[in-house]
Length: 386
Length: 161
Image (cartoon, rainbow over all chains, first blue to last red; front, side, top):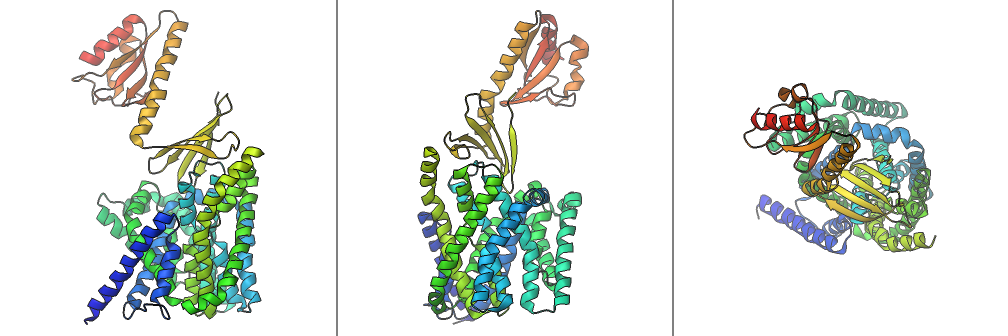
């Protein structure tokens, strides 16, 4: 068969399969991410239906998926919100960082995977999936709740931490010396600061350049700018993902809303490809041996997120029930954790890291939203009695 | 005075809420997309929204009209009762009015009649204390406060120039 024909057949079958899985996830009411990962496991090496030719194509699509995920995440927030949440919620944000990075790092060190894997695993257990959490808040009607601003500002803080963490991770994974590592972290910090300042002071100039009444022109300009900055960031060892995130932050207001609406379908397509690609890289045979460990890690980091949410909500003067809800909303892990594990696997970290991260995210992406749904009536009952 | 609390919801929009005298907490979540949620809080668990009413632009406008416009007129009527000889009237900008599409300042209502335009109601929305550059549209309802004679003069100005 012609190579293009095979590519189309395989890629088409994968996308169609994802569509069916997405519909299934919608019906059960969970995030489709775990199902995409499972699909990737099935298509990859050692899976039931290994792909022949399209893996290379999917790998480029996956890179695009990461850039688009981070770009749209950046578009959700404007620079004002980032600065406000950084100054007013720094303490809760730091508690979040320490409590939730620790389980992953400690686990990697106990397994003897070395400090590099520890840095990567710290990121895997730290970041809450803002995508899944936002969906949980909206599905359960928690957006109006009084603890919700606390949850959201923790998410903003995490995303900002990522802008510094990802360059650190890239440097550590590249095995660069301490000096050149420090330089690239320095570059990252300077870039983040410059982008925030530019966005706050001169945001309208960027917007004047990018904005256009034609959605076609707007789409091309935004994606072009994001890819350009992502490439530049990658070249500077700052990580392409961070570059795209910063472009998203620099754009705000109506322009950001328009761009978000335009990019959403594109992002959904390539993000799904990204999750599949991560699954492809993971050997399903390796998942089972680490499943118990992943479950334990998931349990520990559920508790640490609950504590984080309770602490942050308590500081904001929220009652007992609200504190519990804040913690539960923070449990889901998803896209970021896979992005981090993907970087580590790509750089040749410990072979079991990918399998552990996949199993871990499978559990928490699926269980997080379910937990919120199941626990809701109990919390209400407790609040009534108190 | 009702103390309205404003909270930013990063990535979503803004929330305003307050507690009524009866102890019920209510709020409005303004999404950036234009959606509005009317939120009623649980009395047992005051942090939880037990009822969320999602409103699109039109529905939000309709609710504002129900709550807002009659309230303004009611307030003006109270003012009217308090001060002898002062009336408030609602005057439409009729089709063909010379001031439709022109800024309010050009009608020079206060200079010519002594009456004041205190609000303009358009499509269910109330524009309180409009400035001289506020542009009238056909179909607007102008709320005018003044004496019987001066408000009648305003009606004539708005209809015939």
